[in-house]
Image (cartoon, rainbow, N blue to C red; front, top):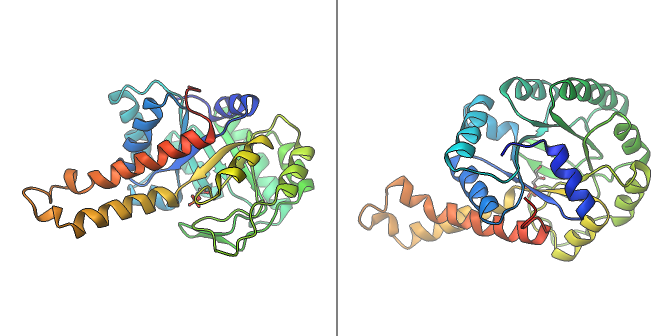
Length: 288
Ligand code: 13P
């Protein structure tokens, strides 16, 4: 069931759990994520980066594939397809292609420009019933070519963006895309608390870089207003490890083990295990 991400996250905010944004790369990713969400009666957001959109031949393909799966797989849990870290131009492309939720990442612009572009996109999205996520303070690391050193958000700037009517807000709190280095100091809960105090209790906050954040930090973040947690790298690592094992065990050489539907199966199953773990940790099981 396609549902507005805004509604999904407001419920999560009120009931103190987080909805997982599982980033998708291809059919296996989307199928595995939707299968688990349905099985666990959990809402889910499917994230698509610009790079993943290009890989899948374009946003219309992504929309067509996801909508087709919702129907063919008889998915009844709430699902939203969301552009992850969209540039100004790609936000418009996704709006035209039929995405129901958009992230405009204007965090690399001076704050005045981030505010102006976010304001415009809030108006366009809301006139079409689309949810909009904005970003303040950069998420560190690299995701599909979107890279930044990582900086904690300024709570005053978060308030300015929140006042534009954004539906949910990604505020940098020391989180990083990809794997965390051994000397990572952890999430800045002082920043998260200061942001929440400025923007108010109601606005759902988004935690990017969900791969590798310890469970206790995840739970604390949720208790402080995080209602959406993005996971990308961890599914890629699970998929890669399971595929490597299959090939190293020579299974592709046994019978018709080279059949792509067999070759990709262990990876797809491994994604399911990761998604199950995340939905359970984030508390969204049974919340559909
Ligand atoms: P990870 O790749 O670290 O899980 O981060 C995902 C993310 O934040 C998507 O925007």
